[in-house]
Image (cartoon, rainbow, N blue to C red; front, side, top):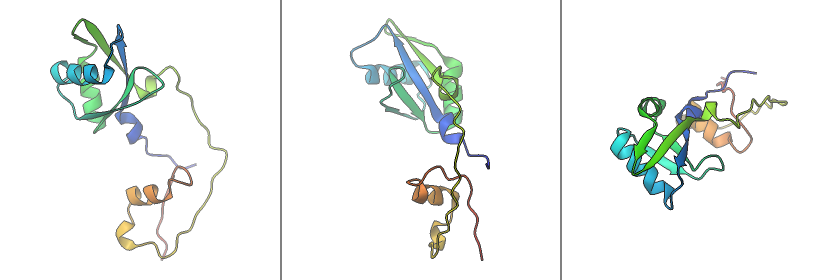
Amino acid sequence: MPPVDMEPCRRLAYAFIEPECADPGLFIRNALEQRGGDPPVRLAPSSHGTMMVVFRHPYFREETLRRGPFHFGGRVLRLVRHEEADFRFVCRYRRLAVLAATNFPPEHWTRERISRAFQVYGQCAASTRSA
């Protein structure tokens, strides 16, 4: 199985707030803005931790984690890398499917656009262009 680009996962962190608060999204944004260097992030719901923090780039995640944990407003914000979360598991693919796309527009022939177009079928492991 060819290697898969894991960069999207290296942008993720899970936020834990102690003690809990009524508006965790606002608290996380304020804490990161005032104590974490104001990194470019968006927040997403998560079944692990309080929320998922999605950084624009892995660099911003690492720089922010280097500064933490964040003490702010009588609470502590702790961020955990996605790959270090305690629920993490290794998924071994059992099937590999090979797809051939004909008449694929040349302007869409990039790794990102191919992956986006075929993500409904699964993880795009590799792409090649045939003559």
